Length: 207
Image 1 (spheres, one colour):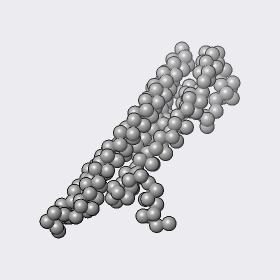
Image 2 (tube, rainbow, N blue to C red; image 1 turned 90 degrees about the horizontal axis):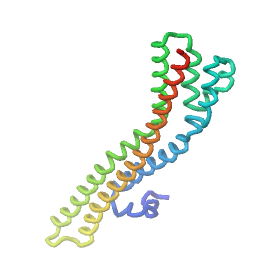
Image 3 (cartoon, rainbow, N blue to C red; image 1 turned 180 degrees about the horizontal axis):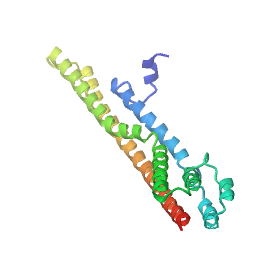
Image 4 (cartoon, rainbow, N blue to C red; image 1 turned 120 degrees about the horizontal axis):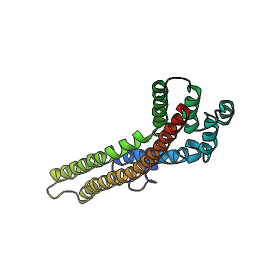
């Protein structure tokens, strides 16, 4: 199937000129990342419910072997960070904090994976819409320059392209911004909780 035939099934894609498929592509990829992150950023994958309540008493009682059996670092960010603390509990406080901070940065990077592209969509979609507007207006003025009155069909097509790309670019940016803010709020909340738990557990080990 030819590209032009595919564009017929996408609303306003053909009317908006060559910019519209690019805007649609950015929006589609951002939406896919959004749903993938929603699936990834579930509490049981980041901080399993009730796990902290189970391990805190064991830390106070220094039951390290039992802790190692409970923790499964391959399953959640919380367990990976706590495993770093438990494994290196005999090191100095400064070294332990540095290792936990390094582990926390890696986990945050993992939580934020893909958000950079959504942020790019927020920034570039209005610019693509503006580019389409300029392209459409060039067509309008070209039609006017070739004919005194101008071909109504070419004028309408150029104006339509100018308006549609601006609308599409702004819409894609707004939707992507909403998705980005929602995901960022989840990442910040989980990062803050991981940090609080880490500090709490380090304090218990030091005591």
